[in-house]
Length: 156
Image 1: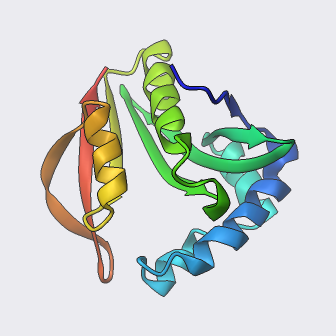
Image 2: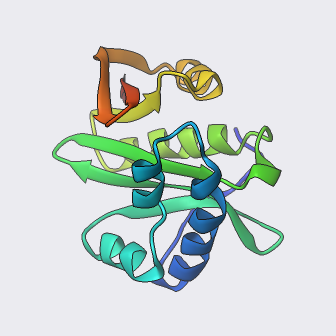
Image 3: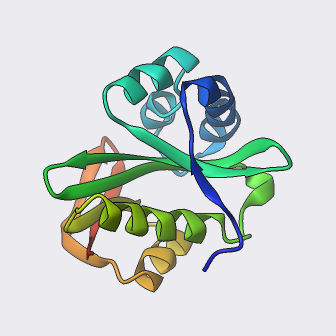
């Protein structure tokens, strides 16, 4: 069990979520510029996504959001994406805490499967999904121009 508490964020957290994205995504040079811009959402865009059914979950330390991901449910499947962790807090187990919570949430909601996409070059993320029993689904594909990802699936 993780030492971090993963909580669900609400519209009142949208500004802080947006600020974290503005801090992290422009510097995430392993992603194409177009994708980094797409992942840097405004407060209004976060609220719009929440109202469309996306759930934002993450970790707050010392009163501030230091990492999050978003989740959507389609049919009997749960999709986790957009994981964002402040650089100062990387390597501390936040991603693992969020994956653990993603799997538990999917089970609670009656989902049968969880899906995530991982850049084929992100070794730490690949180790993390493997640790939680995710398996490759299909072949790597270009999710955006110049961005090769592998989809991973876990039955829950």
